[in-house]
Image (cartoon, rainbow, N blue to C red):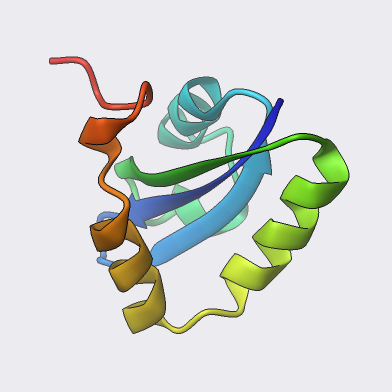
Length: 91
């Protein structure tokens, strides 16, 4: 299973990516081993996750997410709260 995700960065911007493990990838971003974009915007938090059957589908969705406006990304996150998924942050 592959996933697309949106990270909410400390500066309020969003970062879109894809991975086979969203929790591990978020931890990598927060450790400074993620994308160059997120390194200067730490910490980041997982804001949105969507599962896809294969890597190709996930990459196509990542491309689409990257082209959404900030407001559209915020709406997507608001419409799909993580607390209703298995990817909710454990406190």
